[in-house]
Each structure stands twice: as C-alpha cells, then as structure tokens.
Image 1 (tube, rainbow, N blue to C red):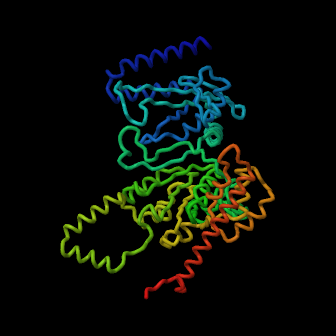
Image 2: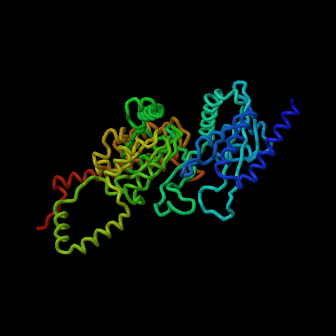
Image 3: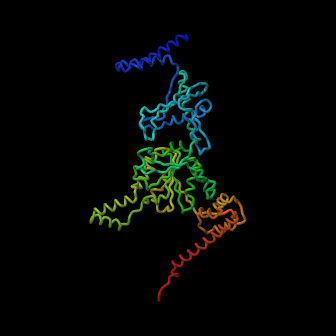
Length: 485
C-alpha cells in the first residue's frame, strides 16, 4: 500500500512540475480545465486543510487584525517549540516578547485536536527601493489541520485564537500620547496624521489634590462608562462620554486627564485645533483615532474662535460699509485674517464630530475639553449630551493640601496642620502653588520647614487679597477718589 501511495504522490509531483513548466504552451481554456482537475485529484488524496492569514488585506492594504492576533497568540507556542525566534522589546525594556521567525513551524493542540502553524514571507519581486510606509514583503501565517476537524477549527478554535491574541496584545501594549500633525505631512514617505510618544505620565487619582468624595464620584463614573458597551448599544447612543474640566490655571486639569488615562488604561489624543485646516481635516483626524482612548482639546476657549459670540452690530455695519466702498481691500483683509488663523474649523464642524453622525465612528472614547473661563464657551458646545459631566477644578482646600503633604513630604499628620487649616479659610491658592511651596528646594529643608514656608505664603496671599478687597470697596463707595480744588 505504501509503495502504491508513494508512486501516486511521485506521479502527481511530476505532473504538477510538467504542468507548471509547459502550461503556458496550452490554450487558456484547456489549461484552466487541467488545473482544476489536478487540484481536485490532489485534494482527494490530501487529508489536510490549509487556511492562510495575510498580514495586509483589502485594497488599502490595511494591516489585518487577525494576523496581529495570531502573532500574539503564537508567541507562547513559539517560545516552547520553535527553533528560530524573533524578539521584540516592549514597555521600555521591562519585558521581551518572542515570536517565531519567518519560515518556521510550531504545533498547537485544542480540545485534543493537533494543528500546525507556519510563518512565511514572500520577498518583493521588484528590486527597486520603495519609500512607502508599507513594506513590499508579503508575510502570512498558514494553519494546517485534518479535514475531519473542520467544524471544530473554523467555529471554535479560530475564535479562541483571536480572543487570546487580543488579550495578550492588551497586556503587552504600550499606551501612547498622540498629537496631530499638519495636513501637509499626511502624504509622502511614511505618512501619518498622528505623531506619538509613549505615555508615561505618573498622575493617578491617589495623587490628585482634590476632595476624596469628588474623586470617588469621578472614578465611579469612568468605570461605569468603560463597562457600558452593551448599555450604550441598548439605548442607541454612540459609546462615548464628554467631560468638561474648568477652573483657574494651576488647578490640575492636565493631571486629571492623565489620571483618567491611567485609571482606564486608555491612549490619549491631544488635538491642536490651530493646525487643523478645516472641518474635513478634523473629521479625518477623528476617524483615524482608535478605541479605548481619550481625545483632548485643551484651553478650547483659546484654540479657535469657538465661543459663539457675535460681533457687535457697529463692527458688522462698518465691515459692510467697507465692502461696498472697496470690495477688493475687504477681500485682502479677509485673506490676511484667514492666513493668521490658519484654520477654518467652525463651531458647527466641531459639534458634528463630537456629537453628530461622525461621532459614532469607533467606540469607547472619552472627549475632554478644558478651559480657564467656562463663561466664554458657547452653551451649545458644553450642553448635556456633548459634555456629559462638568468637573470644576477649584482652588486648593485643606483636604487637598493633606494629599499634597503626603505626596511631597510623606507627612500625614503634623502639629502645624491646625494652623494651616485656619489660614486656608478665605484664601484662593492653586494646588500647583501649594505643591511648589511643599517641595523641598535643598537637602537642608525638611518637612516642617516646608510647612512653615507654606503658612507664610498663605498669610502673605491672604493679606494681599484683603488689601485688594479694601481698595475695591473704597473705589465703589467713592472714599478713595481724590478731587482737585
């Protein structure tokens, strides 16, 4: 039997070789007929099924999520079985991920079924140098299994591989901080809409200078959102949530954003609106973001003219009069203003991407606006449904001070705390100022010295605020007005 089987396989190999060598001499129809029947013959003899997973698929050559998941899944089997491995360092050299090298094979067992995974790479046919961001090499994985187990593999095993591969990717991934690049850099060699670095901000909710009750409320809201995929689908809303952080400078708005990202393990996209040319570019940027991310527009009241304020009637009338007298000069002025602003993003365009149809492109996104002057923002920009939760980042209170004292001085209780609590009443001091006063400036300064410096600073600030209040009161009553004669 083995002799006959060997002879059959040899004959088929010779037939394929001859067909491949001389098939171009045959008519097209006849060649196709022979090819189909030879493959049927081979499939009849061969008891194994093969599935191929290419790295890039589709017309735009987008990297396949399945390929990436398989690569992560096979990292464990590769470490145990493969003879040739590739190493990749992640998380700033804290861990090394191994995967099998090209043209290597490993085995896997699922519910008693043995399968074979092989990694292949097809080199580019052209020898010309390409500056494309996508390599011309074609890499793919090939899964081989016995045809008897087709149902188990296609319906259970592949889902298992993709699920485990995604979990491994989440465990090993580096969280990134992105910023948008000018549209002129979106073309050419290695084009990208976002530049990025590893996100390493150490801020957490434990280190935030804020009342404990307020921090717990925000944390619960964030965690509920991150687990709300099914709920948002049920109520028919895009899986996103908006937060408005407002308050004076130095009250910890940026630290709050970092703490949110660290709590949820999200990436951060920091959008600089002044570099976005128009509404169309803004949509493209938002489409190019990933899920599990925080999209931030800081100081939105200063980024662009999005306050919704209208020009005074007199200024409008003057512009119309100028246009009637000299329309050419008017056009030149408008062009100069456009060149100075560098952006045509409008309020309606911004509202569309954060709350319109385009906001549903992708899921699990948090959108954050920050501002020092909430009164300057158009009510349509910050209404419920767009900015779902408004968080006031206020001046430092005594409870926030105790958090800073523990962070900077490792002091949880001190005899000077009573005096500090007394001085805090009636003062408006930002957490940034308090933190600076508590930070030792030399090796000689200890915790008590820093606390005394803070008391002195608070008393001086309170005294200055009192003087300003008296001067303002005198001006209102007219007692401080000096007249001549």
